[in-house]
Image 1: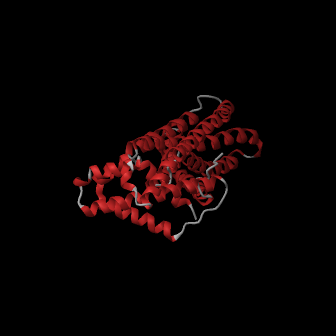
Image 2: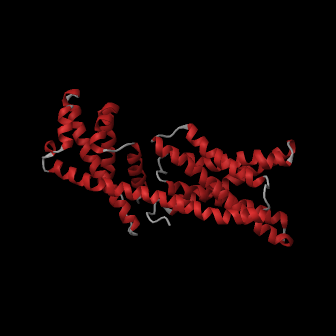
Image 3: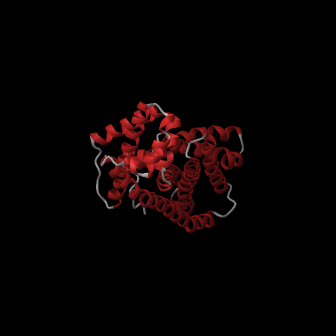
Length: 313
C-alpha cells in the first residue's frame, strides 16, 4: 500500500529492533513492579505506560530528526516498533503457557501482536497529525499521541472483552484504519505534487530567462524591496531559485520512487541543501515570512523535502 515507498527497509528494521530492545528493558521493570503492587494495577496501568513510552521514544527521535513527514510513514514505523515488541512478548508467553495451551497462545498472542502495532502506530499518527497541522513539533503534540497509545494498550490489558472477541475486533477494525491513513497520506502527497508543480516550473523558467521581474512574484518583490538591504534582496532571489529547484527535484524523486526506480543522492543536491540553509539564516525569519506569498509554502513543505532527500541513497 505504500506506493510512494517513503521508508527504506533499513529504517523499518531499526524500528523493529528498537521494539525488541524495548521489550527486553520493560521486562525487568514490570517484574519489579509486580513485587510492590497488585497484578491489575501493573498490567492495567503501569505496564501500558512503561511499554508505550519505551516504544514511542524512537518515534519521538524520528520526529526530532525530521524523518517522519507523512501519516503513512508514521504508521509504518509505529507498527514496526510494536511488531518487534510483540515478538519478544509472544516468545515469553509461549514458554509460560506451553504446548498444551497452544490455542490460547495463538489467540492471545495474535491479539497482542496486533495491539502493540496498533497502539504505537496510532500514537505516531496522532502526533503526526497535530505536528502537520500546526507545522511544528511541541511536547503536548507528542503527549497526545503517547496517551492514545497508552489508552489502547490499557483497554486491551484490562480484559474488558474476551481475548477472542478483542482479537476479532482488532482484525476487523485495523484494516479500515490503515486504509484511511494511507488514503489520506497519498491524497496529501498527490495534492502537493499537482497543485505546486506547474507553478514552480514556470516561475523557475522565468527566473532563468531573466524575466522574473515581469511575473507577479517579481512585482511583489519589487514592491517590498525598500524593506531590505541590497545584499539581503540578492540572497532572497538566490533562495527562491534554489528552493524552487529543490522542490521540483523532491517531487520528481517522489514520482520515481512510486514508479519503482532507485534514486541516488548526488553532490550537487547536497550542496544545494546546504546553500539553502545558509541563505535562510542570512535572510532571517522576517525575510522568509515575506517570501510566503511567492513560494506559497510553509515548514511542512520544507519538512517533506528534507524527508525525501534524507531517504534516497
